[in-house]
Length: 359
Image (cartoon, rainbow, N blue to C red; front, side, top):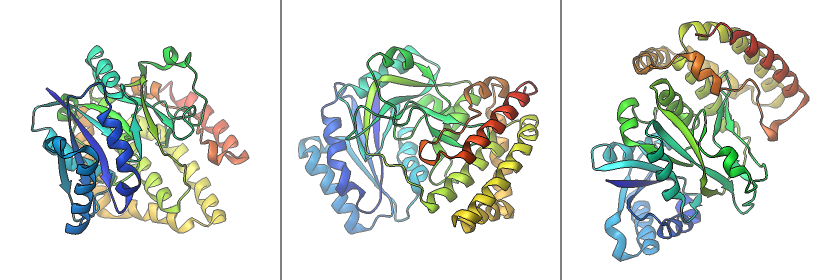
């Protein structure tokens, strides 16, 4: 049984900037039992050939049989681009699929450590690497990702200083969901819960996958000894806001039980009104209204009803257990403000109250 390594979908000139470093990192891996799937999103004949040749030149002609190239004329986003490869992998003789963002590279034993932890924990459906920033390699990008009870997602430990003593503290840590930037996914788990939900397109699709794994009785773990270095920059792009805000609402409507959904809705409404006020002051009101418009469309509710039924069919674990992995606080370092601090006081109190009633 082999590993399948997927370099996250290329779009535009992304490969020109980052692919060499990522593939060279794979050539140095202590575990070499893998094939590589490279996906070109929004591809043309010219861009695909350039992308393919770039990868072969880096990896070398002698290794070309281990490189498998996929292309889509449409930009399918992170979810759809990865699914192109995952659909093939599920029908072949692979035990794990490992996603690596193209704008990063693995430490020499990253794959070995990810597989080691997956073997030691048969119920682990996903194992995330410890993702560090680069060039600031002493700073954390993600020690697993956090789900806020209102659906917001963020990196645990972002820009904290990593010390050797932290390995024991964080190794085998149960996390709400894995970052798609560097994660091992067990093929048997994907067969049980399905692939990325392509409705998300980009952002929170890894949150949705992690939520489904927990609902179905799998675990999601962090391997602090498997290291991936990531060229990550926090961006407050208005375009990204739309996808993140829309998709976090999709997640809570999909996966909470009816009782839990009713318990969190008052807080959802309060935060929505607060965000509407902030949007009107901050110049992104149009994007916030666009999120609301999405949920008014009949096609959205048709999708949500079906997605919710699928989530219910997966459920083996109740919300009371899963909610223990969630947070009451929003810890976004780059958007810290007095308003956020006040919101966290309200949200922490509200979450403490409703936890007594969640089943």
